[in-house]
Amino acid sequence: MPEAQDLLGLDRGAVVAPAGHGKTELIANLAALGRRTLVLTHTNAGVQAIRSRLNRLRVPKSSVAVDTISGWSLRYAHGFPQAAKPPIDMPIGAQWDEVHRGVLAALGIAAVRQVVEASYDRILIDEYQDCNGPQHDLAAALSGIAPTLVFGDPMQGIFEFAGATLSWEGEIHRQFPLVGELETPHRWRGKNPELGEWILDARDRLMRGDRVEFRDPVSYRHAPDAFDMGALFQSIEGKEGTFAAIHCNKGICYQVAAAARGGYQAIEEMAARTMTEFAGLWDAEPSAEQRRAALQWLFRKSFSTQRLADGEGPPPEESPIADAIQSAVASLSEDGPRAALEILTLTRKLPRSRLHRQELLRDVERAISEVAAGRCATMLEATSRVRDRASIVGRKLPHRTISTPLLLKGLEFDHVVVPDATHFGREPNAQAKLFYVAISRASRSLTITGTQDFVQLSAPLL
Image (cartoon, rainbow, N blue to C red; front, side):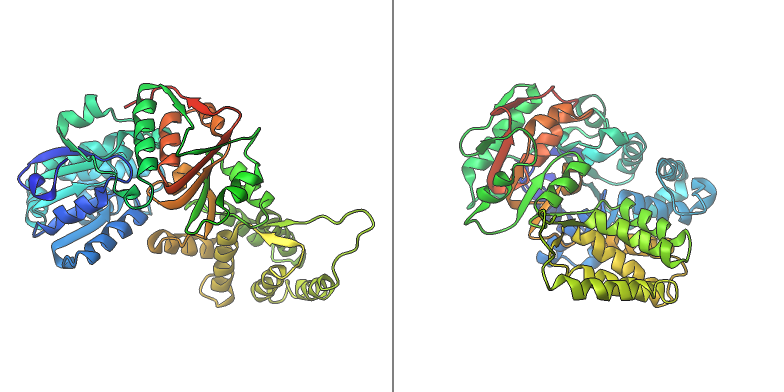
């Protein structure tokens, strides 16, 4: 198992790091040994995690630069526009590949290489399993300018659908030879070492395409689908800490959150598609009717409402709240944003309704506030501003979360429930990797449900 000091003299190499084995700590320790280290990763959340670790180690900010690969590339592209030819507007989708290719072209110029060489004495690239071809080509070019090490885990490469399909043996290790694999399961030390051993054994089995049995220390519950509320609530009785339920299907996550009546909160994707769709409905027409329809659509997406039994009337406290909502609805055409904020505040108080997408409603309220204050002319503009701010600041997770492996990758929870484990076998890409990412989020307890007490998934592309 390599230590930071062992890696200091290497010109290039790759470190394989299974989940929970101290990769971020190693990167921070290695960065602290340099004078001008550049650390690149893929997400703003990853940037925050590395910066937090550097702050804890009291590493001076002047000696380490931390950025996303795309963010760093975009700045260099605009710094050398004649060579890199960056897009005029903020890149989207495949345009990012053109940004990376543009910077690669710029690095073919001696003066640009000299700028990089003068700026950094070492380059560290995290989450390398998430790199695609253009990013790998860029990393290879950087490794010819400054010593470069890459860190990642082939079993966490779950972005195959987005083009992250590099072969570690066939492509990555040709450029960055394997220099070590982390072996100490830090995540489970002092919490549940047996669970850490089971997850590591499951990782080996998944890599081979072998059967993984749900045995002690894992708790297994037989269930026909993902909607076993006993797994979500009975399995965590008496336990403290953070909780997550993990399912690959985003729609199922929303439905389970609704069925749990707010007991688990669904978190939103960074693209914020639901909020953007609400903004489109709101901006379509400035009439009270249209705005009311937009708010009703949002309510159905965010709340679950208990139905009344035959002959049962609503609770007495519901009537004055409903009257106040109707009064605010009448103001939607005159002072739409402020009336909408009042309506959303009141809906939270409805006694038969439970909010299960708190993050969505909070972000919508922030967007509406931007329009109400006159800082944005349209709801779509406000939505974009809120989304961009969230991508930089990050999100604060609820006490109990339900979401997908894609959104929870890189995070850790005390207790994890994986509902209907058989569904991983129906995923079109990265079945074994998605399952491994899901189970490795748990540090204290892991509960798995399904129609059988094992999974056997196709051996992954590594």
